[in-house]
Length: 432
Ligand code: ACO
Image (cartoon, rainbow, N blue to C red; front, side):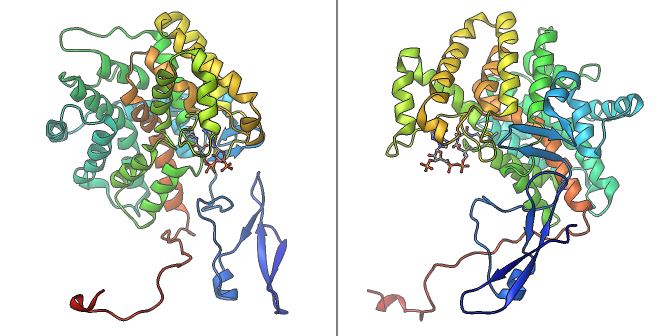
């Protein structure tokens, strides 16, 4: 804790209210305003949390100006190149990269809890065949709270850990079942001998008539995308997970809340929106027209996959994904190259346009991820689901961190009330 103070004074008053300046291990200092209302009788106002740190966290660090992302201190570039998603999930949850035996044990736990209760599988029958997979995933992951009554004491760290393991294990199974329901195909059960990403590909792509031969490049690319999407500090879905969990709610219900927030096109839904946008643009000759639309204040169109609340520089994840795009498209899907070329053309024109330069709008993680998913044979409607699988590791880590923190309290923002002043009830027959 820093000993520095800032002083708040009000016009017409001599009183100076001291506010503690707290330094983190990296990043800007924060002004501790917890006593402000008690001391000065005012709230702070910051809709959209533009300048507000909502919690303490030791999980992920971002420097948006420099384009830096680190999980538990490790640069994302190193993790992307050298680790695996399960290593990263362990790192996020426990704070350290696992030793060999620890990784073995963790992988065993995750891969041996991938099955979901058969009654849960029957839930899918209740969904219409064309239900959006995110809608099904949100419903079914929330329904896990109706099972597993053995570990729902959120005050018990071991119960929390078991729930977190279950969520990481079962999300791919739920996701694949949603996909199969869309296709009208029978559910394919998980296989314990496969990797986390390989098992997901198997559950999505195999059929009872034919095994799916997993391409090592597809498996590696999917694992990498999972690493890059695993956490991103206090983004909208993670903050939703924390807020839902702050009241002591069931963890499976909290993940359903986090996933609901992720689904929006301003957040994780952007990957699906990028592909739809590229298809709509269709050809390089239309790029200029769409850039003009994105700049037009009277047009609601935005360049999807562009811009970020925190990054005012190139999103480091987008840089990595763009490189992988070349590799994957060259080997797996020549037919999809035109879309990648169109995306690169659009990026090139946008990043040299004054509007995007002045507003620091660069491609974000979702700009290129959909192109890889498509090359792997994964349809647009599943893109945000893929994101949700990876981000589950981040959601549960933040949820565990919050409940472990003795300073944790229920999240309860205040408001600036601008509604009607007190007025008397008017009986129905007297209302004008
Ligand atoms: N295209 C065109 N203009 C944009 C874009 C865009 N993609 N993004 C921001 N702007 C403009 C805004 O119109 C605004 O202009 P103004 O200052 O003249 O009013 C300015 O840039 C700032 O934008 P805000 O919306 O105020 O920025 P905010 O931080 O609130 O929003 C967000 C960030 C939601 C990501 C935004 O950039 C956006 O909508 N991007 C497209 C959707 C997207 O790709 N989302 C994924 C984000 S990454 C993730 O969640 C995994």
